[in-house]
Image (cartoon, rainbow, N blue to C red; front, side, top):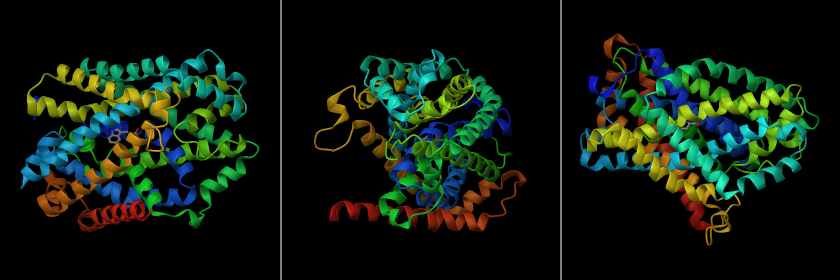
Length: 453
Ligand code: TRP
């Protein structure tokens, strides 16, 4: 343990876990996935997924990581029958590379928007059409988006190599409450915009005709994504955690904050969509075409805009740092690489994988309209290594924790050193039955729908 480093305090661990969870998943992805999946019903399914699958899987990841004190690959190999399970660890490592690669594209866009906000580009935008044109020109600039992507990938690497990761997390401890207040103010502005009513109704009033297997998969994928689950991130963080800390309450707090921020982000973005006549199904560009309009319609909008983009970049950095950690811990633990080499290697590979994703919003015709796939490369890999790989990963994490290692042993780990876990019975049931069975049913349904057409 001592050679692998450790968290200085319980608070440090919750902070890092919350830093990993809170990021673009809540602020950028939740609003656009909600928009694309019909609004309120999606939100309800998302909440249920967070509570009955996400939270139990987070507790499983925490106990697995702390118990084995290993990286995501070594963790599975250390278990009974590890020769078989280590491939789950392999999937975690690959997901780490790929998710880091495309996530950094979007974080790069935020830097671009920060710059635009600073030079005052958004001062005049009150409607979505003008912002839409601005966004297209921006995302279509091949060199610019690649440079921004590069800045995030190697900025993250720099933070990790220089050991200033803890500094960033301490900084975010002070800044995240500010982001929270800012989001609330933006939400107030958004819901009071003329024409916001339709968006509010879309967000809050369930329309059950929107219910579908695909939507449920999206909701579950979003729950895993925003809680940083399904690829061993939380397990890796917990591998540096001391036995004294209470895993279950830490997981509950992290889940609570993540869900809260997601819901508020929905109140910021969706009412503004109807107010500005934008489209709910806009996709990954949704917040980028809507936000400048909100700032434009707000007194002091210039400062809100600049402040907001700075805070979101910091929130994104505490998330990219945690993604990078999964493959890096693997190379350091298993391959005995130096941390520095591992970080640079992962950063370089992720930069290369992410490059076509950066060009997939208009900069390159090929990557924007992938021949034969009917979608762009960004949507393609972010669905595959997002919703799908995380759900598969979470399925095996639940299965392995509940059955192979055993829920009873996991509860023993959770209650080590006198910690109490009142809901041990409920958790055991959720992790052994509810989580794996639900994930499997959703998958079978989606695959059947794909085959039947
Ligand atoms: N949860 C983070 C966010 O919402 C992103 C993230 C960090 C993540 N680590 C992860 C997503 C691991 C999936 C898996 O921004």
